[in-house]
Image (cartoon, rainbow, N blue to C red; front, top):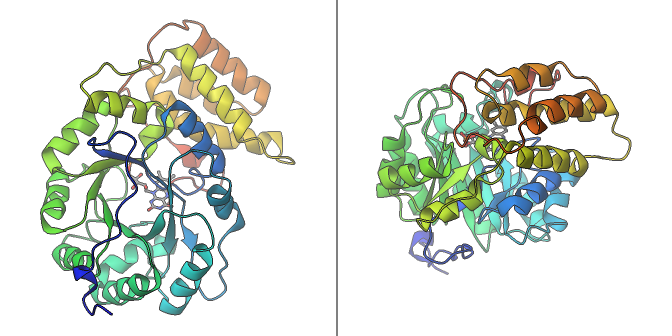
Length: 360
Ligand SMILES: Cc1cc2nc3c(=O)[nH]c(=O)nc-3n(C[C@H](O)[C@H](O)[C@H](O)COP(=O)(O)O)c2cc1C
């Protein structure tokens, strides 16, 4: 056996859709990137890679059934990485063994979740305070994962003091792909993204890096690739707003004209999302609330004053929701949907139900 895992050839990444182009990935998002949402995104133009929302790993955990469905019933035509959040070596390796029975592209470790109830348990972003623990976890995972092992991290917890040590661990354990969200845990979601720090990570690690954070459009994706030198981009919230973004990225990378959606196209997207997220027995009010979480992001591209957002937030039934969509999206159906979010419009998905969509 090779005593130095980094010396082993890292398992090759699944090929992207267009050879030679930068990679694209849909960022893992809890309560968002489920089977239904991945199907909808794939309809409008799949990214090269998908990631599941995280499987929670602890002494009593079993892989969550609804997340397994996303793997087992994957009809997107693209590979899905299974993300884990946890810190107990025995239970992480036990979970890996269970997940290996499902069609996964690889195992991804979450080193970034900023929700206090998560990081206080020293998992997710909490682990960024303890590089020694990350060393043990990556060692155990590398031994347990015969295929691809990937990591998704933020830059640090309060600051970037451990960044280089953690990047060196990524090298030491032969990680196959690193996604870097260019903020610390304490910076949550709204601060500027540190693309210079992502460029630093690209220069320091041997594996391909996906740049993540505030990639709002295909044009931004190309700019971020230029400034970071990353192998690809990972896009989260802006794919909820604009499901055509991966298709537009591929056109942008080929210097071709990208698809320009109209408000009528957005209406079709909302209708499809409603149909795909319909679950037998789900009360209409809860379904509408779930839709409103997605529409908080979509609304950032509908009108500059946020009129759609305000009207949508007041709806409580399917009929009221679609009446608002008809009025705001079919009133001027050929009008362009903004490629960049309108400035000043804030998505507030957590206001829709007591259970937050954005990790608090
Ligand atoms: C609703 C929501 C849920 C998220 N859940 C996860 C998750 O399960 N695992 C993870 O690694 N990151 C999660 N994230 C972080 C995203 O993957 C991504 O790093 C972050 O949103 C920044 O990228 P963006 O600006 O493209 O959205 C979540 C983000 C959001 C908005």
